[in-house]
Image (cartoon, rainbow, N blue to C red; front, side):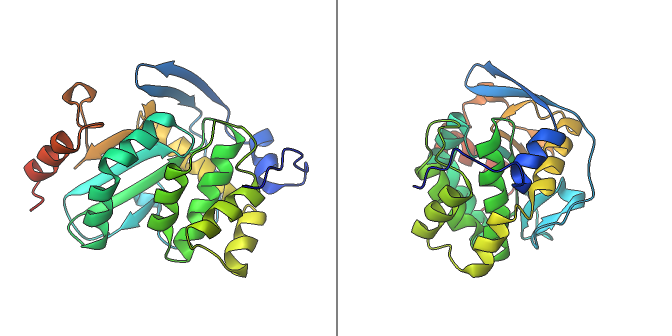
Length: 227
């Protein structure tokens, strides 16, 4: 991965970090608590995003049940959740068995913003799921310098997400304001740790073990009507 620690103040994502949402991060148990303001900006939306769905990236918008995943690409617990349950979520999305909505948060710092912006750019290319899985599989240490614009482009290329349009989208920070709005919407919905998953509007109980147990997660999906 390309390391680019010397970011220009003209970088749209760096600029967003300076003037946009301020986040306080507190480690709590297996997740991370977050506290953001709830102000939103007018933002360009990725093609698959929906304001009424919390600005999330939506698969199968007309289906039920509905699974909402709030996550941060730098969050180690989110990586464990993806490793454990990512294949099941992908199958639900691809096989059109449920509405699946991904909400990329960015409270862990600038590299979370770069990664989330890249996810939106990948969604425009129809490659969100490929990008999503590969970014978690290759998650670096938090804010280590691995995920600059160049680093995101290099990592995405290894996942098969390429092209001038994608690179321009990443380099211009096209969806940086959208990333901020996802965070603000998370605060509005009282999402205060990651990963946080809702099934039909009900948050999964962390004590259930479903976040990090595929069989327990599947039990909840079956109970919600997944066949």
